[in-house]
Image (cartoon, rainbow, N blue to C red):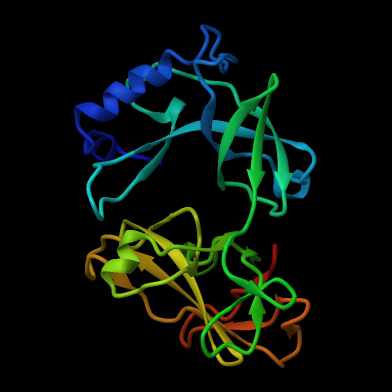
Length: 267
């Protein structure tokens, strides 16, 4: 949820965009289906059990706010949640197509095609062999689109959340930390209730081990900041295989809540 300060950080330009976005909705709060709005950003609100490629899901129209500068942090905001917007837009039915199944909370670019809203979901990256990404010093070919599932999103103060993990260019915060080339990250950020900062997940491999950590664009610990390893899996152990790619049995960092359970499978 974007705060008033975060919304204002983009200055007058963000409020001008909000005014334009308001004009794209009809008086009843629904999306105006016309050429005035060829595309929208939508946050998926359909429950994960009901999300399937080839079927419709529900999204909430959203905006990307924040100061537009190199390294600036973008902020997602539901249109209805923006203070002073006076808007209560209905959810929009969007037809899913492509090779990747999104999760609840993911953001999609939705386009208006032939009287229907459509979102195409795909995973990117350089692939080899069976269609996996070849990572340096990694024994497995990793699918470019992954699904991470946390058995208990409240575990360890909400450290592990269910989301998609995708292969692509590193976010600006990772570039500032010295990363180059495509990486596996979560396409959306999450709020850390302890530091009161936003983070996104970074997933990587060394030989037959996979690791999960967090990257903070800004935080009390540093800006940007790379967290310690939070969770790891060993391929060859029970439930963890390269083909099919699945990491079902892992371990949280020492001293963490041992009941935390996180799995990652090919999307």
